[in-house]
Length: 317
Image (cartoon, rainbow, N blue to C red; front, side, top):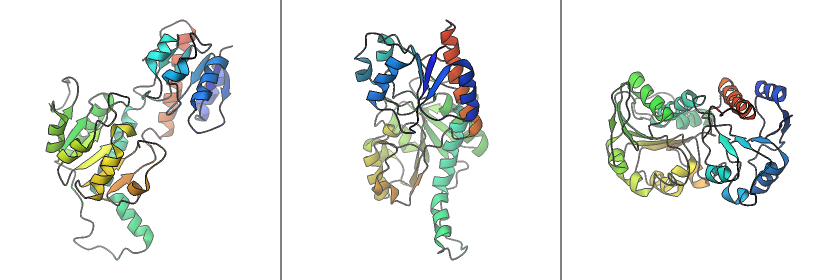
């Protein structure tokens, strides 16, 4: 029977189904795998079901011409923790779980947009502190979301789902930055230069994949181009944003605020960032709904099952 390593605890429904299909071993730690653990996994298992942060780097694969492990069925749509080219050279297929995460991640983007513009986290802290003196006309005035202009950086599945919610739900004008023009079911305008997009919008929402090509895509230059009242929202990968530059920008009040679900050195969040009132910080909740995590896990298992039946996995990357 195919020996499968699951690197993090998954919902019970997924684990039950996995055990019905494979000889399953579950890793006890909830922390990302080290490169040493990844090397061992390639030797000891026929398949691995890894997730965010599990380090299957070029250096890991460099020690093998071929490995016992033949497939990495990633739990999640993002796979920048896996060097796909190096895996392929070693005879290892990589799959992911697109589609299952789209709506949930888009919902978190809207959550952060509302929390940041309406100062919801700051307000909740005020109430919990016991120092709230009651309603008054000029207390904690934020930015009204309806009718504003949103800029989407990355117009893939998740970017489009965010844009759709913005247009139909809030009557927002949609601009976007993408490698190509998109055919969409709602009005949206492509802006070819990222700083030009940043200069025109009330909210700049990041929805690009992680990886070397997008690292620090949102840098000091982009942040300086943003309007003073504008808000930055990141639900993509933490290192897409230059966190140091963002912290300085927020400290100096150069933009209206930020909402982050991901961080450059996750789970480490700098004290300087945590100390600021004009940033909303969530603990990577993008897909944190039971039915979504179950769908992701079952999709990963379907990729594995297809592969070991000799078929092309539905979601190879």
